[in-house]
Image (tube, rainbow, N blue to C red):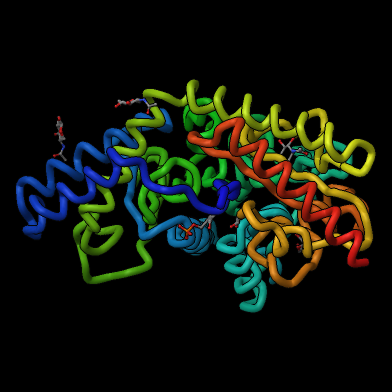
Length: 397
Ligand SMILES: Cc1ncc(COP(=O)(O)O)c(C=O)c1O
Ligand SMILES: *[C@@H]1O[C@H](CO)[C@@H](O)[C@H](O)[C@H]1NC(C)=O
Ligand SMILES: *[C@@H]1O[C@H](CO)[C@@H](O)[C@H](O)[C@H]1NC(C)=O
Ligand SMILES: *[C@@H]1O[C@H](CO)[C@@H](O)[C@H](O)[C@H]1NC(C)=O
Ligand SMILES: *[C@@H]1O[C@H](CO)[C@@H](O)[C@H](O)[C@H]1NC(C)=O
Ligand SMILES: CC(=O)N[C@H]1CO[C@H](CO)[C@@H](O)[C@@H]1O
């Protein structure tokens, strides 16, 4: 079978497996010198990948934890500063923190934010623009209130990208100009790292979520970048009692950290090769699909500014008989329907719908994401598989 769902998860590079297993053999001792050296090196490698400082990286169990840590920190930040500010917050609505995010975030932001709403806190989910398929920076700025303490938008998801840099510049102006609680800036880079260059200095974020298994052929852990950890930007722990990761987190998962560091090193050294390979394969895939399906194919989110991810092709083969049946009927292709993990339900992707893709088109959406190792021969096989499958489904109808 041919895997084309590299946005969901990636395999580990052999060098990463080697780093993990060496650490398992050699660095099992808890406070061992070896373990410390491995963690130190990984921290430097992960930092270099995103253009940050080693001391600003905190290793986490994954992206979900990193994202929750950011939301948790924003609430603590608000609580501490509002107490200090006193009369700046005169009426009820201003006593509660306000958070801004988009309507296309991963569940680890979306559901965590919805949970805050249940708790009475204010959250604004800014919708993506139907014209650009991006969240509009102006829409986010318009949503800012006196009690806004966090803006969290992902750098790129499977279907859209967000101009985070421009957003950060504007928010920093607000932070400077007004007597107000500082708005913290977070971006979840899980879908961007390993595919496009990511530089925290250029972006100007306070927090950046890093996920090992999503994009850069690393292990299933993650990290959080915090700009000036503990000095420039606050971070408040969720777990108490384990002081290992500089009091922010308990016992480190040394082998997985070793793997994450190795995967980051590969990205730092080879990103432009990975990027151009994936881009070429994706273009070839789109050409072949167009050739075979002609006017029965619709490329979703071909928006002028949405060409962010070099490896992702979201496409609908049109016809009432098809919908989600295509993928489950394919013999060779392994891929994913719709945006998030709701594949089996057959519900059209809410991301595509909110980008203005008609629902009968969105209902047929397939997302094919290629990887570092995908070949043109793989593409030929997949396109042929899709052709046969579609023919069969139409006949059955
Ligand atoms: C954009 C994004 N953020 C966060 C996560 C969560 O990461 P993890 O699975 O490591 O908790 C994922 C993937 O599941 C993701 O795609
Ligand atoms: C991207 O797609 C993969 C499946 O292909 C899914 O697991 C992941 O959650 C998606 N991310 C977003 C932000 O939609
Ligand atoms: C990590 O290693 C570098 C040099 O390799 C050293 O300067 C630094 O002090 C080390 N950091 C820690 C926390 O051990
Ligand atoms: C209370 O807060 C709301 C929202 O910020 C504001 O519109 C309103 O004017 C405030 N009322 C007072 C009495 O300050
Ligand atoms: C990428 O860089 C590493 C060194 O960091 C090297 O070992 C590897 O072979 C390079 N090439 C590819 C295609 O990964
Ligand atoms: C073929 C296609 O429409 N691909 C788009 C899918 O979504 C990504 C991410 O936004 C776009 O970059 C692609 O152009």
